[in-house]
Length: 293
Image 1 (cartoon, helix red, strand yellow):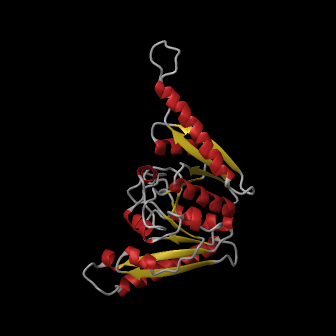
Image 2: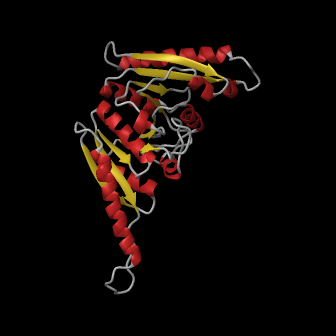
Image 3: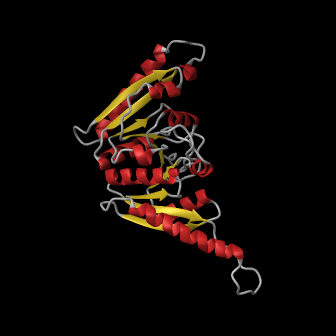
């Protein structure tokens, strides 16, 4: 398994590297830390003297190499790590191209920083990746480099009722088995989404969620090794955020979600519910692309 970490010398980049190390240790994966820089501009005319823009490009390349070396030096020796400088005019596209080129199984990114510590904040590049990546993307919350766990403790997966969750379900099971970590299947019920005029949870909606949770749990147990630790829980609240916050979260927890039904096949698209979950948690989130049609 290979993880491609999107790096830049900011707090968000440090968070991404820390999450990459956490996932690599848990999934027995190798890391590639990548910085994307703009390509060197085309030379015009027949002059042989370096132009100012080219000198700036050389300086940026040198700085990127130093940043990568510093990032890699902070990783423990037990994690196989390589570093890469990729050139592309669009950083998000450059990371996706590099992931395809190297056969990466997952992209690891950090937030933009500047938000409430522990709460996800998305910059332009992160947002672009979360709406176009063909492979799963793991997002580190702000401050993970200082407060994050060294290994995954439990994988929680938000399984909804809508069609198209098979890939998410199978990815969660494979991840749990590979890391040998417990899996928690989550079914969320938001009053505002079911019957906005009510002030009490709709019992029929909760009953349906409990049936769905049990069916999903039974399906998971049928595919997992005997006695593998897997559980299910139904969480309700006025909003999705409130339902998520009602659950118990601990250091080392990771939440896995699927893409919007609006996503193209084999492409990731952060949907409304996933975005709400992202805002509500202070743990890493892994977003899985939509399955092929």
